[in-house]
Amino acid sequence: MRQLRTSVAPMVDVTDPCFLRMTRLISPFGNHQLWTEMIHANAFARGHIHKDPRKLAQHVPLRELNDFGSGIVVQIGSSSPDDAYEAVRQLVKLGVRNINLNCGCPSRNVQMGSFGAVLMKTPQTTANIVDAMCLAARGSSCRISVKCRIGVDEHDSVEFLQRFISAIVERTRHVDESSIGIILHARKAWLQGLSPKENRTIPELNYERVYEMLRAFKTTSFIVNGGIDSVESVAKHLDTADGVMMGRKIQEDPWFLSKLDHHIYGISTEKLPRPLDVLQQYVRFADQMHNDHGSRYSVLGRPLFAFFQGRKGRALRANLTQAIAKAKTPRSTRQKSRYSAPFSEIVLETVEKANAEHMYCRSSQRETLPMATSQSSGKQMTACA
Image (cartoon, rainbow, N blue to C red):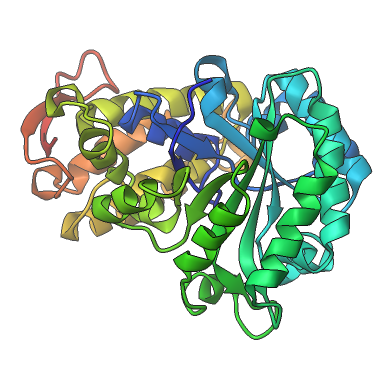
């Protein structure tokens, strides 16, 4: 299995199957690992989400598992070894090859469930959960990993982090060493006083702490995360770490993946997908998601908000939101669909309304985009490609 050295971080309400599909269209070369938003292990152990195809499709990128299984990571949250075991068992059956335990989220709701960053305060509990995950994945090609911070609250030392990682490594020694990985967010987490958003920016970055762990655990794979937002910084960290993870940078500018494909992986600019081709493919996928799984247009439209840049990009977001709201049909008159038009038609007409020829994409080329919503209309529009 080829090791993918750049990753798109798990982000709540961002890295859903729709966003991951768009990133795959932007970067179809298989260079980047794509992480789902966190799914609670209870959804499998007690909610039996794996038995509900429509609900499962809203959380697990089934489309990507078919042709990019090795590049998809499903992140779970759990404080129970039994629940984590069942979640991994069901995910392995679905064909998932990478599963991660969230030990870094500082949100209050997650704390109340005794998982996320609060798990770092109980290394043995965490180690037992990870061991249960490894046992559930035994006999498969699934790899288990842990994503955590470099410290939590007053526990902010090299020794604390070493004890935490050591507990996991020692407990899972029966597993092939190459199957366990650690993703370190190079900031500590404050469980009180800071919001999740503030926890991503206020605690100081400490990459040296990450590198100390690399030196201390030479046979363990480490990916560095936090504040990495340029091609230069990606290249610098890849000189030392096993991999690099980026979150908000990709959320705000998914086309950054295309830059990495060119500058880090050597893909020629001629082979990089054009924005308008990506848009056409994405809206076709979105139509299928709605028809097959009932995905709401508001969810399908969310990945497009960062698609175009500049002044007119803001107009697109506002117009798309309004168009989706307007397309909803009253409950009393609904038959098969809750919307009056296909998602693809709404998007492409909204792009035209936003005067797309003035939008600033990440590419400087221009082309004419046929309106894919009506074969007989003959409409075309010019957009920055």
